[in-house]
Length: 132
Image (cartoon, rainbow, N blue to C red; front, side, top):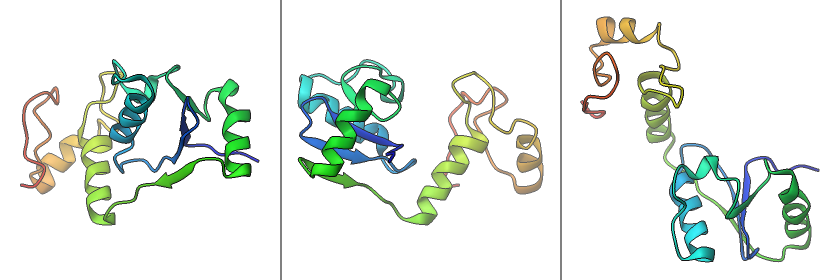
């Protein structure tokens, strides 16, 4: 049995089934705050403490027991498929990734030329209007 993409508060009061591009960073920060009274200092996806995550081996038995025994409130968050795809497009195709590069760097010039899509300049750091 496995529960990839599952986060749980350290107090084991809330279990969250992560769906990418559906407010997972915000929800993770709120979960951290609910246990610790502070937001995680950094990207919650990188946290190795403050939340139980399936990706952390020590958390797996706790999450598995919680799911099996239904001992806490469990939820997920979904969003309109169009806005989710649009968010994904601007994050993964147009945006700069954590490594400082574009996810599909060779695709960006084609998007700019063919469709007139703004992607925040050459380095991706300038402002751009996703809606435009």
